Length: 171
Image (cartoon, one colour):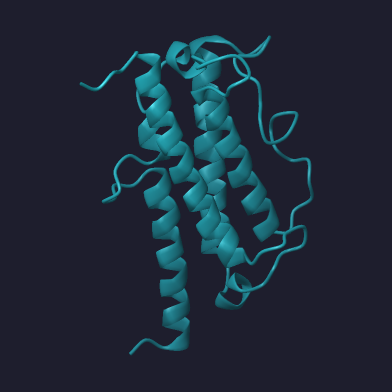
């Protein structure tokens, strides 16, 4: 039987596995968020299904932003430290952020935000899992499982947008 300390470590390990499977680790559910954009170029990431609809590039930054928000809440950090100006949705390609180098930089930002989120989760105690952080209406546990669900939701959107961008029609 696990000691309370061992159980705490296993709770954290399970949460880390959940966020990793949703982001970049193999899992039974299929493509995760990182896998959905793997090998994609800037042109495809910038394709927009119609006016006023988000593209894959914007979804990628949106996911990075919410990983930052969850990490910030878990660590009780002040607002305003996200590397890009703005919040939630970021228009891409933008005036100064276009082309392959900008896309690669924004994918790197997504990876960086996941690494930071992962470190924040790994440093939590079992007691902190059930606390509600300042600026949030839900517990740390709900934030962590929610950000994993958020990744998978957007992975599905990306998969759909990839098919739409190629004019995919199933027969």
